[in-house]
Image (cartoon, rainbow, N blue to C red; front, side):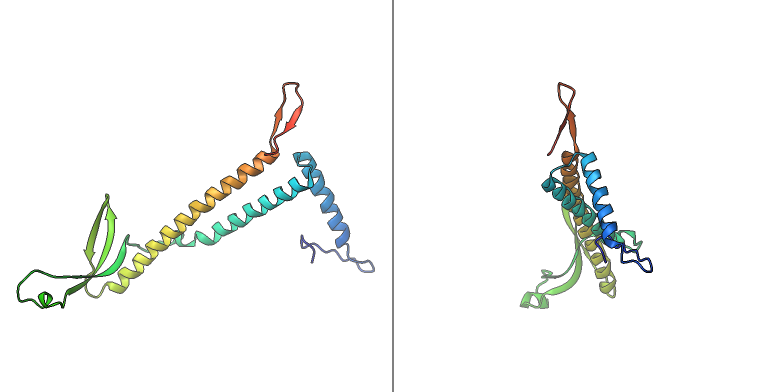
Length: 174
């Protein structure tokens, strides 16, 4: 299969893949000349930038699925809290601390702890995991967005032309 996935077969004739490749090559060359990207190294760089942009766009497709879910989430982290109650004669004064599962979350700049009621630990852990996944996806989408903008700026710089004071076009080239 060719780079573009195009093969023509006519009975009694050989594959026309080479001819199709030649036509695509000519079309690409014309496009590059029209765009003002004439040096081979610039065309290759532009092609790599285009591929990078396509790769980043396809990564976004795979990331957004958790954002479409309507399942509830809980902000925070689940962990076990061990503490003394302060009552004299309690088992905790001898080292056997009281244990409870809590969700720790920041609200308005302050860390808040909420005790998880008995029987709800697994459910709360699932909701917290979904929240953390949403935050990871959001952070990754931000990174991808910044990379895409950088690539688009580079592509624009390679395509940009300016008019000189004499009225002739000048290539931006970066």
